[in-house]
Amino acid sequence: MLKVEFVDLDGDGKRELVISGLVCFTDEEGHKVLRREAVVYIYALLSGPWASSRGWTGHES
Image 1 (tube, rainbow, N blue to C red):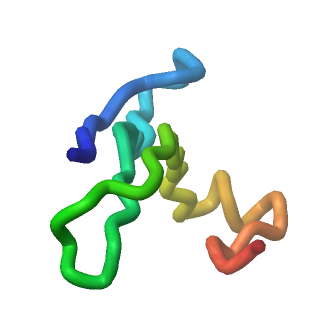
Image 2: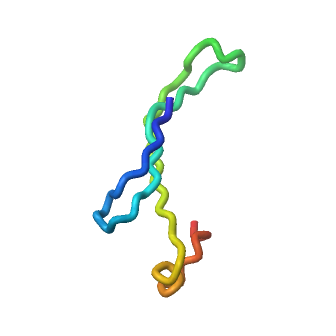
């Protein structure tokens, strides 16, 4: 089960998208959990003059 939140992580007044929780990897039938992994993904949405003045396009890897 994943939890989705919008949180101001760095205190700049803009909220980042935070996805966290446990991912369960199952067998082919989906009946037996083979492995669990904790995950956290953080996405900062960059747009407008602030991002473009730094050369950020939002497509960086």
